[in-house]
Length: 129
Image (cartoon, rainbow, N blue to C red; front, top):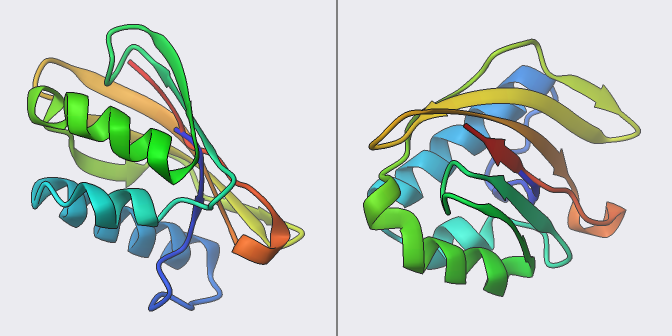
């Protein structure tokens, strides 16, 4: 998927717990169709590289506005759920990286998620199906 910002309420130090908390909150926002909350979980300077899972194309969106725009266009048709890690997340210099999997209305997706602090710079999710 793309680099993203952690939810402010989730200040755990274990990389697995950090990723699990972020994915839980992200999935809840998507299920509620709360695009603003979901996009607000991304760093201000972030990128989401979608490799077919959401847009049926190769598309990169930038920043919260780009994420919100893509979700407004594609969320209802995509209906993503079941976000989870596929390997143990790692941490390097305060940035947690994790391989994730999820389902959509028409298939399965995989992605790479990077969680960082806004002050540390951008982080980005990438998704592919």
